Length: 121
Image (cartoon, rainbow, N blue to C red; front, side):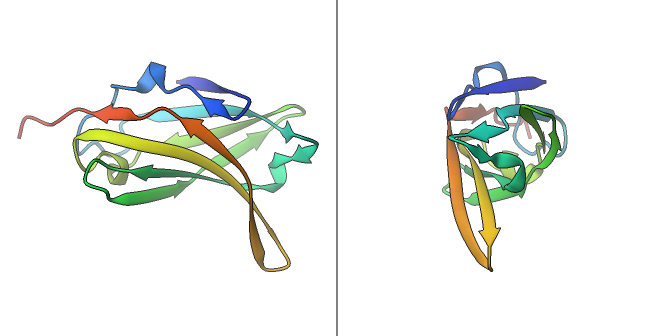
């Protein structure tokens, strides 16, 4: 599944109720973002997807990227750490850059919460 960022917003509508509690690598989401933001080349950044579960557990995952002239295609293999508990899952995509051993946040993408369906067991 591919989803596209519009500016600093990423719609989660297409996968907002896709996940079930306890799934591990069941889905792959490709997030397409613009390569340049305010003149900054985001291909030089590290992209991390952060999540906070309904039980207030935090998780994060480094995303791999494929770079073209104008876009970056990020790959999120949805791990069990994101689906560990049912209920609301808050998500945020962050791009940061390390310069001289200092980590700088370049951009944060807003994402609507998604719902993790409870499992039957």
